[in-house]
Length: 471
Figure 1 (cartoon, rainbow, N blue to C red):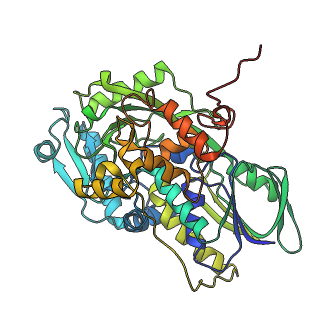
Figure 2 (figure 1 turned 180 degrees about the vertical axis):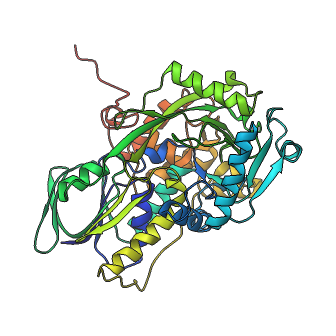
Figure 3 (figure 1 turned 60 degrees about the vertical axis):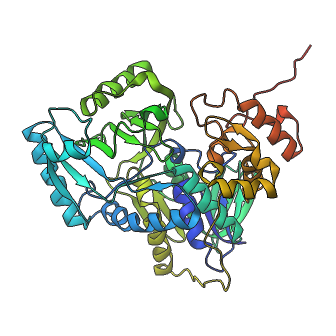
């Protein structure tokens, strides 16, 4: 019997797994996809919000502000790209200027440090490309950008190193209560567990209803994005927001940790799993973005994508205990920014509900990740002398070597697809989006995993690349 079963391995599930791996618990993570971070975690704005937006007194406000410092420390420990570039909320009218003032006051109440309301001239001095009709801006210096999927992967990797079991392609099909806990049917197999943590994202409502009476609904909401080439990466210096509305924080323009420019999202109700994009919705995103930064060159777009938010009928995070079943649901924005604090909160909630958490005598809480393009010439020479495969560049756009790809394949959570390699070491993230390096990545994966190229998928199970012709 397991002590804890965590359902879902996005950034919330992986954060909780990382946190609980410090303790003498037999823990399993059940993930329905063929890799971690396959839902909202891999398709979002990649922003660590400062914490001025959530209403005072909510879990969102408390855990967002608490997480800002925790996330910075975790990214350093886990070798995850992180850049504290600060954010601006632009106002374009007297009404919006008043809203910026309210956000400032809310941020102060929430405990956000360093907030300032800037005049147009002050904003223009630090963000030269903003529109001329900006009236003022809220400046939040603690906001940051990260690599969200690598963050989740790093957390999950360390959890696995510390003994947490990860089961991929293990979609939960049924849950039943027993005298000692619960029985879960997942991926065609059954497991017994004392406690369940429901971190299933857009499917958290369905998972809850398998075990407990219906109390909330998840309302999937899609956001679509542009990802522009690195030639546009310096178009802004900060995360640039517009005043938020009832449907979200609005269309933002921001540098990414990889040096690109991200623009989006919109907010459209959708079905869970619908990550399609449309010309009409993307045109809206574009029209809103140029309101903030008129000079964006959308001809430099290299990819469009969409992510699905797990909004809910509750206007806050849903983190509650029910007789050994812990809901961690409705984790919409600022979910990524709050993940570390959510994990800490869940740990305390478990203890408050009688779960015994005894720390291990030995525990690993760090991870190293080689990045050839960030090394000095001396470091490159040394690593190539040790392993010549680090001298063979596979992805020329991002300067990713065969040594890095092989290192990624043999890490604690084995990647099995081309996009899994992309998420681990950025091969295929550049301007050509894998057009040149993709076939070579397939060859390396097949060789290292000892399988046929026909067994290598692009992304989710069934997204094959190579198929034998049937005569």
